[in-house]
Length: 126
Image 1 (tube, rainbow, N blue to C red):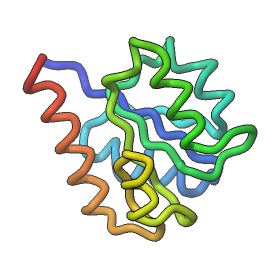
Image 2: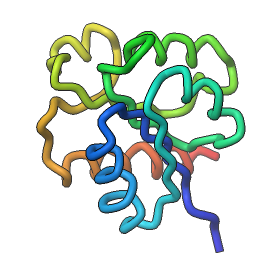
Image 3: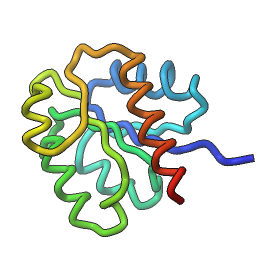
């Protein structure tokens, strides 16, 4: 039996992080872990080894796009899919930054479809 895919949720709002981790992702069979800042993410990512990241734009210390840039500079994280969630970035701004994401508030089903698409696409090629 395959081990569950691991999703790292980077979200500074505890209620949103809990909702994503517990209600949505674990019900789908994904293993989830949440961090509340870019700094905590950088400290833990090597031990977590996520298959996908969900990153909020508004984070302490550096924003989600800056975290994304730092991760992409490391070869081992260049192919890891990232989904942004933001009340501040519009879909058009996300396209300008060449990232995929959803504007808050978002439909749960839209997020689940993105997650499934990225994880199934990733593992179809490995």
